[in-house]
Length: 190
Image 1: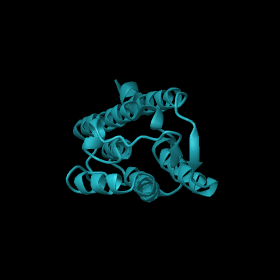
Image 2: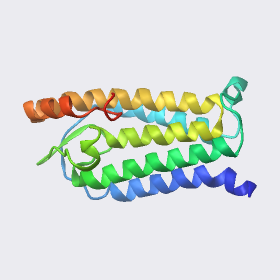
Image 3: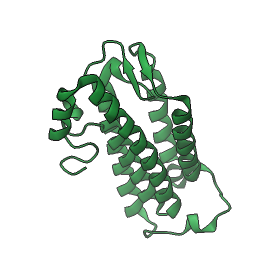
């Protein structure tokens, strides 16, 4: 059983990343893409966050202090939250279809999607990813999980702000009206 607990999150995140790579193959051609430096900065923040979760020892002991009690309750609560978040982002990715991209882009024949998970939040993939990282942080019960969550939040917040700017420019009043009706990341709040 110990092996299960040690490998559950690794397997879950690995399956998620494999799905994401496969799904990335069928998208529309890009018309406009964000600058390389922006993408690299975001990638570095994500890699640091992943390292915080999966490297066995980082020489900063405070990262391994607990902000929650260790145990099955934390593990399973975190597992359920992580799985729910990742499934929500997969639903959003499927619903977005060929309009999806890794970077902030405008696609050829770009469509504004406002149904499905996009009726709940404007950036459901980010909501799902953040929920997944939060669940993983709860399961680890250590500060390294909270630091990883914060790094991912910063990265996605920057990306969200750029996307919002581009969507307003691309779709004008239609997007502005949509953004008044639908929260960015947390339904009815943020």
